[in-house]
Image (cartoon, rainbow, N blue to C red):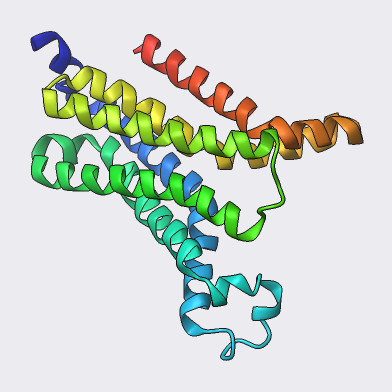
Amino acid sequence: MTDTTLPLQTSTTTATQHNWRVVITLFLLNAIPAIPALVIVCIVFIGQDNLPTVAPYLNDLYFSEPAAILTHAISGIVFFVTMPLQFLNSLRKKHIKTHRLSGALVVVSACSMGLSGIWMHQLLTPEVVGMRYIGLILLAVTISVTFALATYFAIRGNLLAHKHWIYRGVAATLVPISLLFLELLASLLFSEHGVVVFHEYGRIITLSINLTIAQFLIQKR
């Protein structure tokens, strides 16, 4: 037990400063999908009739069948607000009950966000299949499994394994954000055919890259 908890007990000024940089970076990255999600939730709740200039730019299903969109957006907002706080040393050490409550929200919202992504795909773009769809399913499963394992090890008291699976889970949830930058890079570097191929396999490639980076950080620490 000593070996598993020791890495989480370090409390130096340098570590705390570095930790704040991690938390702020995660908040900034999460703002990329969180802000549009918040806007969409507000638009759906206000209603199509009350926003005649904005509504035409959204799929009519956002208003006629909003359950999938709202589930995905709201769970995403909850996750993007609570997840960075899990890396805050002061919260984890001084307010353990708040850390655990926040962690429970992270796990539930992450799984809901991942699985509702498949639901939303089936609602909005059911004609899109192939490797891009398989990549979406693989991403949702990876998010759910990694956070489930993180919870399991936390309950068992293996805090080091818990921390490692949190790293992997966060890496998986950052795939849509990473994919935006990689698709932009692909459009600059590849031919039209290459861009089409990357669009098809992008989720799987990006998931592999993110998990590799997470594993590198785990081993480095």
